Length: 139
Image (cartoon, rainbow, N blue to C red; front, top):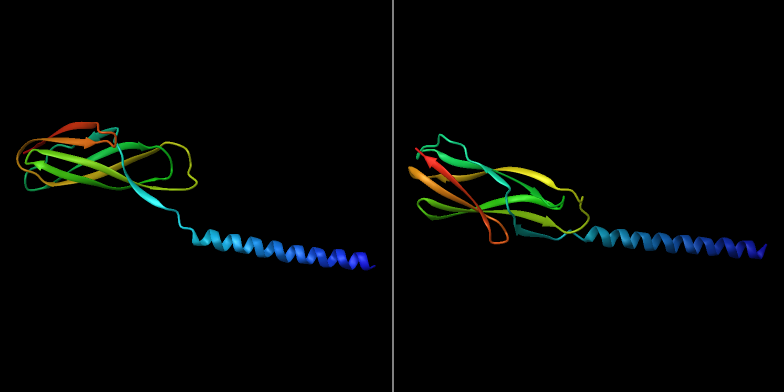
């Protein structure tokens, strides 16, 4: 009889300790927020619509593939080098942690603003120093 009581109390102590450990782990996991960082990304193709004039905001559509599900589109930094040359650097936010490991397509509109009449050179910079070059005519 005494062995049964000792076993029962030992199991109760073990159960309480297990709940304490699980509760502590859950609290620690709740306090951890996934860290993110911004990274320069490349584009696979860019669609340049026609018909823009110097009085309208111009834009392009950039398409590409993120390497996994941790990537999320953030912005595109546009640098107007001179009147007819523009550099576009797409930026994505990458979260650290568990990610789906598949290629994730994206298609985003990038606004270039009002551009002068003429032919413009657009350079879409990749993170590795290469770029994709397109031309845009403004009427």
